Length: 587
Image (cartoon, rainbow, N blue to C red; front, side, top):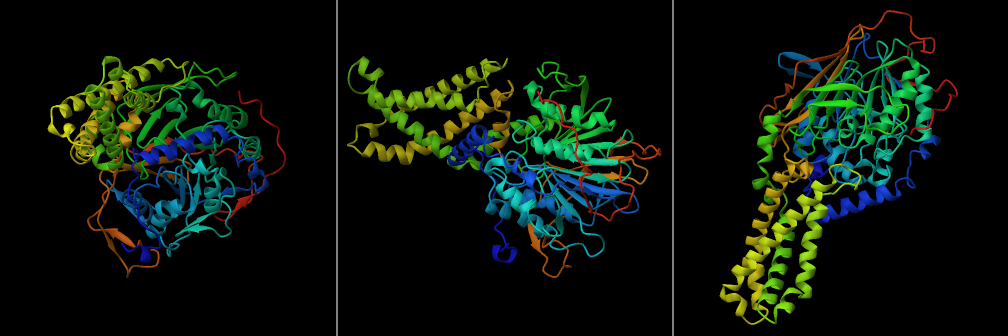
């Protein structure tokens, strides 16, 4: 795969435990949280076009694809993109046509948003999968919702790629949206609303006004698919306020119209999971290319909104049951044990950092243990600094939540236990070092031997200790994300193919890829719209669960008065009908 011919450089998966990446991502996350409100470009988007969109489909039916968390390593990202780009997929005996609309649900690039990252990790692979508009049908349309990683530069690169270009396109998909959020009218009285929460903080006033105007077109017979950047219905189990913004949106923008929100869909958590309740389906599908996140820690039932929320006038709480997940809980548990082999291989920089820290700590311990009195040995300044560094690093790695959290203590306990375990390992290394002849050599002989011999050995042992900590901590629901991020598992990917039939029935086909392709063959003689690279071996896909019928045929009653009566070609934009009453306080 020559980058000169592809037009981009295929990227390796992100090593999430790399020290510089941890520092860079941590600083960007901190800056985004501290100054995000001052750099919030959503307010500025009010100056951009406020059009709504229509996707009437063909003969009253429409196929849509949904993918999220996609801009990571090439093999995983392109495996999903390749399947999305094919004219049709045969899955478990069913023929599913390519979506006329492609919905990207967030985190289109990792680890941080910038032009080069989007080009190499998302735009390039998707252009290679569908280089030109299909020759046998209408050009598919792409809409994208930003996730937290898209927000790390304040949406600058995201808006430039998806929202600010005339006649914009990514390969054979055309881009239409003008803002980071959008409303799309679909066939058979279905609507798609995609909201931008900006790190889950709140929904800005211009965005609320935009959706209020779109909601004027809804009536009691309409049904809504709501896209969110994060599955806050799951996260609210630990953080009750996480769902407040989504609940506020449904309660104040959609509920007054009488329309029914039948499906909530999101990415952000890198797996597939579906919760079902009396009123709607809640689907997480973040398997577009990023590392796999386990499913065995998911709660079996959810109460949404959670009863612990402090929001005034919250919606009535309902129960939702977990009915499907991919990978399965048993598979997820087995994968978690792979941490011992995968963390050192996937994160050599992390192992090197641990080796350096342990080597310096061992030398400080050995020096303190071989000279001076007891007091001097205990309070050797370099040794104290290294011990404090180890403890502080272990506690911060455990990510203690705010003191008000009911699970605050377990993070501190596990973090401190991990820190003392690392100190114990360092003490054992110092004891072994003092029984070797190298420590009596003239300086800098001991340092050279420690770097060449001791460093690699202790780096491996310290990495295994971190792996053991991650595995144990996961049983207490601590550092579960790091347990899987450190492994960088590329397999078990997923996306959704949705079908709105002419009679209004919405069916969701959850598609899984058990094993991605890692060997590709160039296809220079293919059709202009055929993929540049094809799998060396067949790339099978399967249904994660039987097709999910979200809602049946539409009510044949007369459409709501505010609904547009005139037909429009696919992709036509609809201007706002006029001003709307402002919503109440979100809190």
